[in-house]
View 1 (spheres, rainbow, N blue to C red):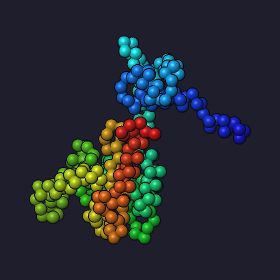
View 2 (cartoon, rainbow, N blue to C red; view 1 turned 180 degrees about the horizontal axis):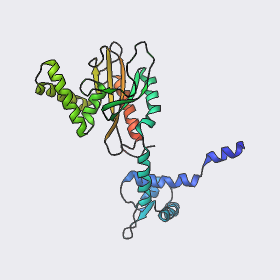
View 3 (tube, one colour; view 1 turned 60 degrees about the horizontal axis):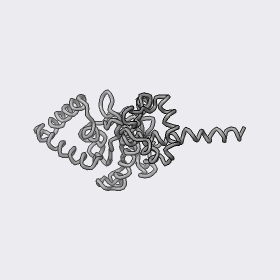
View 4 (spheres, one colour; view 1 turned 90 degrees about the horizontal axis):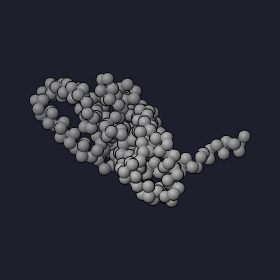
Length: 266
């Protein structure tokens, strides 16, 4: 029985070899000659041709009759669309959030755009002496939270604009400032956030708590979530180039890549 399990885990080498050809085609984003596909996959052209014949039969590749160049076929598109439909930032975020929490020793969370705005859906608590009053389902303001600012800077939605306008009106009223002044300050903050690719907040939502929030993108380049970290002001460094900021950006990039942003997810 042990031998059989070990044998099963070895898989089918020919399938793995064949998919090297498909990976070359997918990465190039254009029809290719057989010799170039074979070279990219590191195999002789004659061997690559046998695989391509089989791929043609099942429709995962196609060949132009006039040029002889190969490209991904209709079945490859069908598989890709099916896979994209299964991508879930919440499901894939678990290991990334756990690893980030261990690296920066701060509470981290994932937020998505929900019915009422930027909504926390997953939290990994660092278990520090300061309790972060954040839980799944919490909706955060756009103007004075790191998470909200990330969505305000990078997310595109007609409803977001309405929520943002309502918040700005409330801030203007409570601060006795003209709404144009409040809006101008926010735009200045968002411009800075876009320049650095990450949002931050320093005690503006919860006294004594700093935060970073980095956008997560899907295969279309659209923001679909935000990874947020929170910590006490005395210990949480919110400089744009701080180690925490760099690790946040790396975590957001890893999750974005898992969702197909910037190429094929490994």
